[in-house]
Length: 219
Length: 351
Image (cartoon, rainbow over all chains, first blue to last red; front, side, top):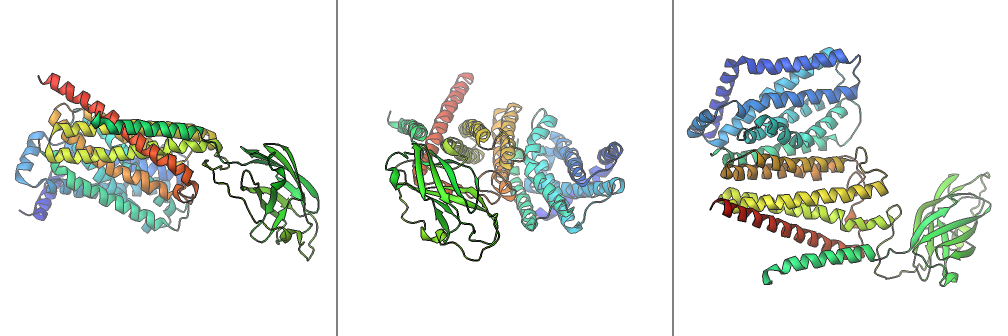
């Protein structure tokens, strides 16, 4: 099997597992909606700045919850089985692709829910959506890789938080800047440069994950 | 003894940096100009306070100008030296400013045979109360700024606001550079460990990371003390480089937590090497890309000038570069001691 067919095969497997264990995705969706509902209840009127901060916090925690399970949920024996069958690069790439799609859907959903309960302050939709896309990409790459590291250790849930939060801060800072520009909170003519550097960080992270993962899996 | 020449070199360079960096006096400069405003058409007495100056020596050679631009400058017609650090300069200010505006900042330029030329930017604000007269007084152009004395002494430059704290360059900035060099060396060791699988490379990488983290904390603390004196706060709000530094140190502290939570030695070496490389890749945007995108109080970002071009002159370079090398060698030395301790412990435990 070559890499692409392996990846498509593994993606189909991820999807099947997700659909079989509906409680996982259901739990995350419930988490997102209950958080947004609490935000809606506790604020009378959300101004743009608060909207921006709350939105990205919700997306960050949703992504940690959604992506963290990607390596942790599967037992060591099952992982050993995968490693015997396929290339390790195919495993990390399929997990990353799956998590990017999952996180993109999640963040679009939470954007929709936010717009319903607390109006939609975004003026430049293209800019905001590109931030959403590149941001979910960066967050899921970093968190997927960290979950692969944390799965090897004993206290994996604590490690997930302390390893991943510092790593995603540059991505989050850029995201907050781009989206506040898209909302008209600030006007920066060089915002294209920020989007490009977000893309560059994504590429850097995916390249590192691709190169380093083969060293991580062999036990 | 032969193999430890670099330890002696490191200590010698640091001693040099400490002695010269802390004892070498600053160049003479203008510390304060009072009053900072005057009205045109009057004779005003302006008090200039110097720093490290010797006004009483060759007092007759002192000249003071209020400078607008290269064409227009007004020279003081009488100078009265009070002591080595203070003098009064009296200006006959013409009624008409040589520009269309009625209020304008002027730079004070001083020249002295003994101390050399010094400048205090935007020192005096001149206000024109009278209505416009058409002719510009010749006083603005008769005594142009010329023949400034350049004194070549090995002194550190005098900068407003910074004053003596400019010496922090040899500690704060060079500690940061040493930290970066140690982290890079530790990443190289991590790569080596992944390729060879030898535990020695992992221990080297761990020791270098520990030494680098120590340098990072020292750099942070020296920077914080400096910030209290120049920016008025230990942790200025929204200062992006400080926040990024905190995050970077969190990343490296997480590295030690990760090591602690892995028990199998072979697995610990491999996984922490992977995390070290990944964290370093995430550190580059953190320390070099993000601060350049937003405004910062630090030099080299958000329109501030970088250190290399203007602020770092040759006398400072002569101490700064040795200090960088000295801190790096000291870090490598500390790392090598830690490495030997780990290796000995392993030898005893595996006996």
